[in-house]
Amino acid sequence: MKKLIVTMMTMLLTLTGASAQEKPQVLGKSHAMQRVEVKGKYLLLPVQEREENANISVLVAGQQVQSLNVKLAVDKVDYYVPLNIERFGAKDLLLDITFYGDRRFTGAMKDFLCWKEIKQSDTFDTTNREKFRPSFHHTPAYGWMNDPNGMFYKDGVYHLYYQWNPYGSQWENMTWGHSTSKDLIHWESQPTAIEADALGAIFSGSCVVNKNEVVAFYTSASKCQVQSMAISKDNGMTFEKYSGNPILVSTEEDFRDPKVFWNEEIGKWNLVLAVGQEMRIYSSANLKDWTYESSFGKDYGCHDGVWECPDLMKLPVRGTDKQKWMLICNINPGGPFGGSATQYFIGTFDGHKFTCEHKDTRWMDYGKDHYATVTFDNAPDGRKIALAWMSNWQYANQVPTKQFRSANSVPRDLDLFEHNGQTYCGVTPSKELNALRGKVVKKLPKTCEIVVDVKGTTEITLSNSLGEQVVMKYDTAQQTFSMDRTRSYASFSEAFPCVTTAPVYGSIKQLRIFIDNCSIEAFDAEGRMAMTNLVFPNEPYNNIKVNGGKATIYGIDN
Image 1: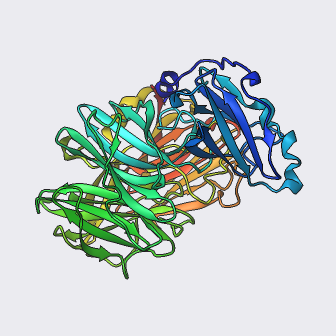
Image 2: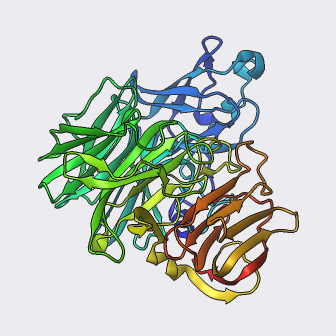
Image 3: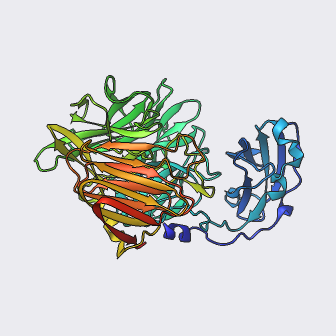
């Protein structure tokens, strides 16, 4: 993660000053215009998160070249976000701004602080200023992030796209941000991959490697949701949108998140789409023309929220020569502990119809902060490597960071295992994480991996001098694993304090626990249980107490 921050433009702000902007022309209670003489690469926009969004239409010679929503500062600046104005190739431009806040609370528009604080600069400082920014998890250099999108592997590089707001650290202005990695641990930030257009904002989707091309599929979201396509001829660094977009339309309100993969068994491409509370399956020979095949979802799984972000894959069953298909279905709300979560279904798939073999609802991860889980296309050695968005819609916009919000989970490899005649999803920390292990230490550092050899019922308590703590317990009698963060700092949301509990399929012999600056991820070392939870202690947990087992603490080399 440190490399990501360093490789972004980590220079101090070099301001040309407010003189590059004329005084705003106030045109009404909620409307203003401001002319800008371009003297720098970026226009630095001051953000105040408690305010309502203002819409900024950027005009060049009377033509709109960009539209964005920003919470412009009224009386306090929380942080700045950069708008690249150099790319418009104009000597001056006009900002047409509409405010939506209530004037009774914000006061006269002419007195807003933003008019004094809008500045120009040739650089934008992304040096980390957040104590909760993870050390070994992927995060955006700045701005808001949610669902991982379009992940693929090609020529030794993993590509991760993600839902990104470059103009604030809360959800808005959806584009595809982009990061790359050679080891799934150290990520380098890349330029924005796909931006909004006349069809709408860029919502979630997937990428496939098709010979020398990378093809992206995503949802264009405006008055309705339609599916679009873009093609990259430079290994996913830039994309050209398909002239025939949209490629799929519907009258359904929730119609999104296309997952595309090559199905060798039928010699065609399959596409799985989240539509309301079902998944729709399509097929194609050319990636452009899609035939509806079937729908799945009625009478299966949890239906307490909207189904989103599907994935469908064939996986081996451990210790056997069998293979089965697994359909991933993310849902919000409806998770086992409130808010968003990832459920899955095991069964058969013939390229046309998915048939589920069980009726019970199954969750991939029993923490509260594991959502939008999808896998990399074209991963080496046939691996199915998954990443999740490590947050929950109940409080994602309120977590105590400002420069950025949200991280991805550690990478996990997926497979299947059998227990008492049933087949379940196995979730194992990816082998690349082993390279993070440093020296064995006695004192608990703020980032580490803890390996606990279990001897029956085991309780692990992490704490600090302020009395904040997280308690994890493996209960052999109940055959459960739980994590209690009710005494972890959580004043930002009533929905945050919770105890999350997972079933244990068999007995746990060893636990692997990954601790970063704002998260705890616990795994059965054999991959039969996973639990991901955020934590925000006022000071790092520096004490550990283990009853019923032996802990080995590895420092993190990153």
